Image 1 (spheres, rainbow, N blue to C red):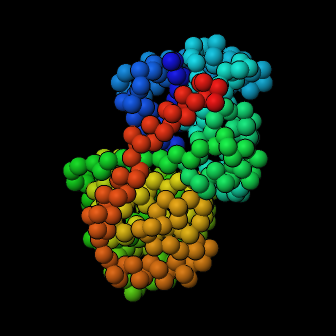
Image 2: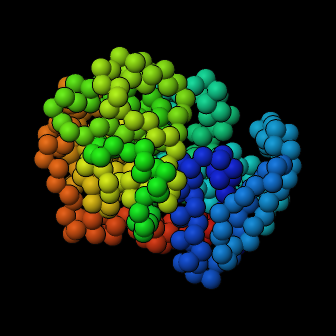
Image 3: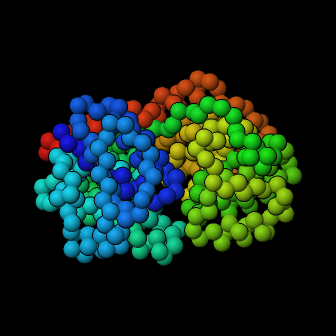
Length: 367
């Protein structure tokens, strides 16, 4: 069977959770394979450097991006099945996919934050989400994969998707990288710290974290390290930092390469992820797998995927967040080895790929 896989999410040039999912699930699918032929497709007028996908056929088209996107948006042309011969299409992320009637596709939905919390996004990103037509793409799919029960519930309640067409397949987490932290990064780290790692954007509640940490900083020995690229609408973060009396103990690292992540997690006394909403949540699981305890929000997918092992907190209550941070930072107990193993076993990319491929096969067979 020919399976066409949309790798356009890798064109965005930032290593997000969606990009991580796309890379890892495609590589794991290629290892599982089941004698299928995988054809990976994308469009980019400019030359691009893609990750390696041994065993896959790469189909890169070089149409001018804006003209190509407008034609697909307004006219539904060119249809992807006219460009890529396949029995079924797999979208690792919701993207506009004009195909002929009767051509089945499977789409993975990571979250519906743009529908539930549109005010967390800039106007430009809100317009982009509208143009992608997520409701239409999802409702017309032969099968839908949700990365958590929480995301499935949102699909049913917000988009009216038939629950019988939605399968929950948890994402995996990458195997811990060996080696220590790079010398350049190590020089920028305080001796002891609590870590946040992820995009700096409103949904992640970084402003609330800064406020909560500032309230307890004089009672704990750890500094606060915020690792990740700046996203959008970061004015609230800047204001919270500007109002903090402990700015000298708050460190902005910027983007952290994948090769440094495991060592960075392991060096932290605590990982904190006080997000207002998540569809899955890679970072706290990666931290737990590296042996670092985690504080996560008691909402959306986070209790489902990490609540068994993590501290849970109300992200809307900075007083509660401050109290939980103080308790965890004064206790500082490493995650037991058996818990680290349990996290890795439960969130394994080969399991994710095996379940995903079964769903793709079902869609191709008309199920």
